[in-house]
Length: 270
Image (cartoon, rainbow, N blue to C red):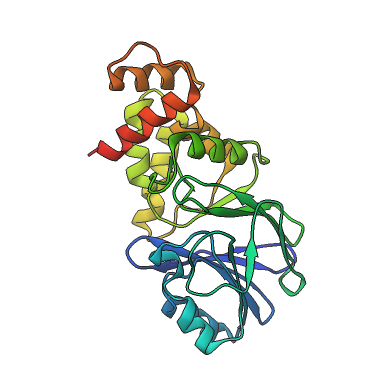
């Protein structure tokens, strides 16, 4: 169920399935590779062996086990450099990163800038930049999902709303490479929020076709998320009305209050 995106200059971006619904994103060029959030080593080692690749870098977004669990095994098998968030407890990290730092890997034509996105965890980061100077790419871990966002395990609604606001202003063509295949369940909830949203209905049909063919629904794009993701639409009247009605209150006024109501709704949605 792998589906690679190949740039005009030959760099591949490939989601490697892990666990039940994780993706480990691999960037490959020539005989070089980098991976993002390897919760398991097995899928990465298999890819390296099948393609004759050398792992040069591991990029981590946060400390949860399903994102870092494969790091030590990969380090025993490779000479990869590990990049990760400055303030989180990681199994290993060679280069600690915070907002504004860059990760430049010329051998992979990869140039990424770090964005601090606390909320899911206190020190969560995202990587935004370009592969082969082409369409921009966002590796956002568990901050932004297709039609959803991460649960608030360590941060607040205000922090997550501010983190998502940073991602909203990225170019609409940015490929959103999140870490979980939650699309169909997220869209089911999103349609409960905005049942008349035609873009959501279209995205749901497309996602169903992809999953029936055992293909990933990702990457999404910032432009698409602005149309289908309630967490990015907290200023739209239909979302404000739906969130307020679910919360049993008069119209909520602030985007943080609306976001918080949406997050609680999603947590309880069956």
